[in-house]
Image (cartoon, rainbow, N blue to C red):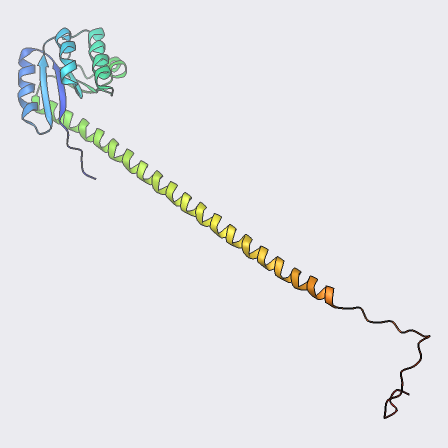
Length: 207
């Protein structure tokens, strides 16, 4: 099953240095378009036109409530989940709260590397595509099962109707014949003692 060809937009919220370096690498990759901003206000303003598929935050640059607001606005504008990646961030237990509350799918430690960010985004795209393929496969299997059940049900109904017709025909025919034979057949006559014996035949067998 072929991967769907679509350009995925990436919103970068980072310093000018990181934003510029990341935009250059991501925009040169097939199927990606990146736009970099330096703060949450600019990020909120860019969401309407960009409709991002991914958001990348530089750790420590935007407060948690502002990051949550940017993510919520992106998901509202796109009507879908928007994964969040973080660069130059801690990879220890301090990031677990962000992972659960903000939906951070990947954290890249310092020093910042655009190639590592590109690879992380491509891996997330592959996961999304695999989930889509799996969903389509499940839908196809469910459709096949429904078709088989429908075919079996129709076949059973046809066989039941045919069998019922045969039973009706078998039950009706002997009954008619039996009734007809019963109407024509007369019971044997009982001997009357007062009736004179049969007249003798020419050879005397009646005597």
